[in-house]
Structure formats: structure tokens, C-alpha cells
Image (cartoon, rainbow, N blue to C red; front, side, top):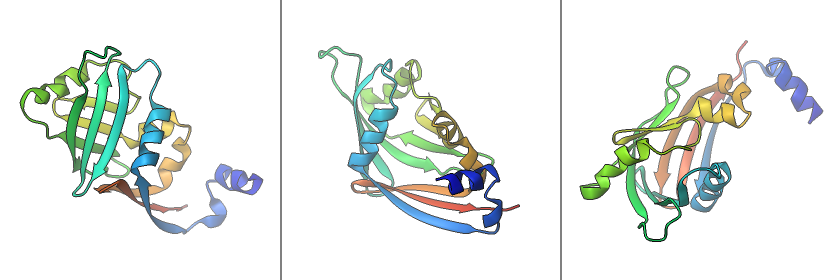
Length: 167
């Protein structure tokens, strides 16, 4: 661990020229555990469950508030735009829900307590990768990321990460 910390402090100088590509499938179970761990206790969202689906689609089920009288909110999301590193490291999800649930976008916009790095505008959810890394104390790794694609298959999000060390 000390060796890693020294390399990190030097900007991985002794590994200059390294290139890496990683494909990381994140299971539905692990994804939901990560979301639960990262959700502030003060957030009005309860019982949040995310289900990755084939074709870059995601089903979301959540309760707003603590009243059992308020029905669960079901949303269908599609990956609309991939992050562009380093200029626009934001994943954009589009709500595809129709009818009365199309009001979910404006309703979610007024919720307090969304985790830093996540915002809702109309029918889009913006996930700022840089901000998520900062909040988790991982900002120093951002400069090494050259690309990130987020895709979904039934039961998992698939992260494809490209990174390099240049000096």
C-alpha cells in the first residue's frame, strides 16, 4: 500500500506511458448496494431499486417520502448521452415514461437531497462523473480517465473505461 501511495503522490511517474482498458460489469445487486450506501439519509427517496435492462435501458422503482399511501414511482430510463472526457464527463439519462408519470421529471427537480453530481432537468437526469469522484475522495484519479462508456444488459451495467498515464 505504501508503494501505491508513493506512486499516486508522484502522479504515477514511474508508470508513465501506461494505457489500460477495462470492461467492468456491475451486477444489479452490487449497483443497488452502492446506491443505498451513497444515498443521504436525509434524501426523500426511499426503497430505490435500479434494474439494468438490455439495450441501454434502466428501470427505476422508488418511493418518495415515508407515507405508505403514496404509490411507488416507476420510471423507464434510456442512456441518452455518454460522458466525454475530459471536457464533459456527464452521463445523460432520458426518462421515457409516458402519461401521468411524465410529470416525474418536474417533480424530481424540486426534491432536496439528491446526491451531489446528480441533477434533473425536465426529462433528463445528468450524472456528473467528476463530481461523483470528488464526493467520494477519488478526484485525483479523474485526470487519468480518457473515456467512459456506460451500457446496460439484462441484470448489469457495463462500464468500459479507458485510462492512461502521460507526463
